Image (cartoon, rainbow, N blue to C red; front, top):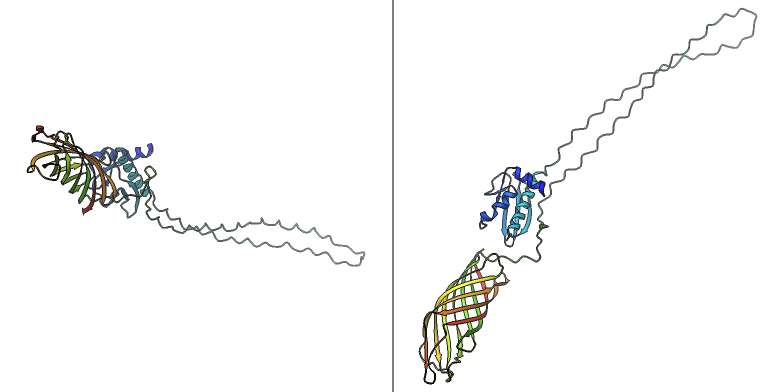
Length: 361
């Protein structure tokens, strides 16, 4: 690992094209470590990163038409971004060193065989004929000259065997996508929701006031989502709840609407914060279903906290806690108990399910 990083820092930076929504400031240190620089790739060697939801596709181009790819999970931490930068530089370095082998030189023709020189056989010495011995003078025959020495035998080496035929050309392997070894996905990737979408929601819960018994509540909302931010319009109300400070057992119900913004921090999966402002109408009753007075409209401010979990591409479920404060004081007068100031606080614990997702991907 150290040798590869040293060479990457010594080479000229290579352009890597990140997804459009990635903050370049968070990538600067990781790209510098791998010898890369963020930009738009041209015709030369460069690396292209494609955002395919929770999986990113890293594609390295060597400038000569060859590519190599690898798939990784979407980075969320600095260590993940460093791994992506190092993998991108490794892919580009691998594809740059994979040039085809040089062609073998043509085989050298063996020299023509040399014919051995003709060998002259030694003269054949025939024995003299046998004749009858006659006392005559026999001429002295000089000894025959020794035959000439045999010429040296020329050994002709067999022609060298032809060099082995070069192996058949193997086409370069096609790019194969493989998951990186440092971050294997643990489960099938869930399709990423649209960058912005319109979704609806329904919620049920229980309303808790300091001066009344708990009462069920319902709500409906319409939201526009853009990444981690949601703009929410909500209407809802609580069923009549008996006021505990009165002997006559009157009850109090509420209905209202609000508009606000909810934000999901990128660092903590599922956590959801929200603030909203609106108006609420309080409806006092006699406990028998009859209203004691007209609705009292009150400005409200709400702070919410939730944990948003995704059930599918277009469906989420979220437990929520909402704290609502009214900015006006309301007195309820009874002939038995006199004037009583109603509590300005209301806490609602509930469960919200959202569905939809009509927007651009």
